[in-house]
Length: 37
Image 1: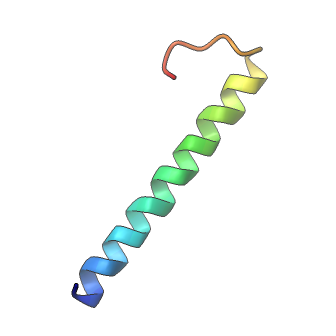
Image 2: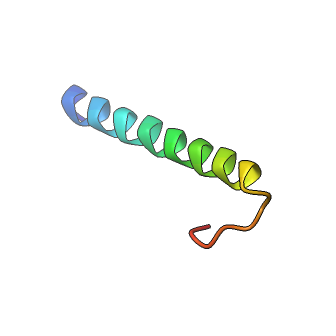
Image 3: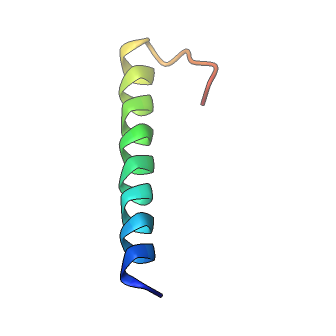
């Protein structure tokens, strides 16, 4: 795997994890009733 590809993959994974954490936080704040999960 090339370094550039590895870097893009790492950034994508970190971004995905960040969105998942934001979704969980929103879900908790909204009382657990969410449609997008």
